Length: 317
Image (cartoon, rainbow, N blue to C red):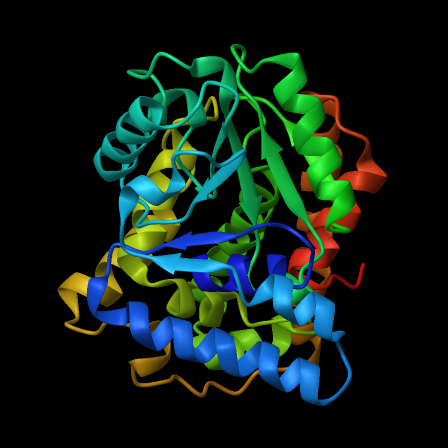
């Protein structure tokens, strides 16, 4: 995700610095980026002046190189301790006006920034992969986020032509949480009708067109999904709501010795057309109901919420 953010932003006229903790990859990252802008120049996508400007972008493993940045977007592993440690260091070396943003998809921003002095400059800028094709960013503010910081984030996302939804600690990560409602429903229907994961996904793609619901969890990784669901469960009133999905992941990853849903032996039960139609209708019903519930409960415009969800996964309802 970090490389995707950098590559997307490199098509705009920002003075970019890409810091990587992996010192072995610095030279490779530099070569890959230089090839990209040389190719753009060769094919007339950018001018010589733009090329000269963009070739000055810095890719570094020197942490102190970010000291004078106006905005830093973190995209390391989804681990609270690792993120907390990183932002404590950033708080020490950056100027007070620098906005500190996390691309976290499941950890609340106030938890990451609880031990830093500059809480007012902490925000979440949650991009979705791949950025070029997923025109949605969740801005996750906290009660402590400064109003000037909020406005700068809005202007930044306008500049890079991204549609965004503003959220707070209660409504944080609402797009992924909407998808999780559908994945939970999918798990219940999968077990009800005794279907295989690929078999179910082939039906679900009549509603969610961009990817299979279980395929997506395989792509994210089961350990990451499990941790994210645990984080999301703390945000709702029913802490045990997602247990069927957590159990499905646990049984697949731990008890059965498999790492992915699609690696398991697939059931190929015969499925009647009426059952297939029932699954499609129940998934559509779940999407509509969840959109309405989240929109009303968190006071978010339902059209904006639907656009964001559609940008993530493609919906036909």
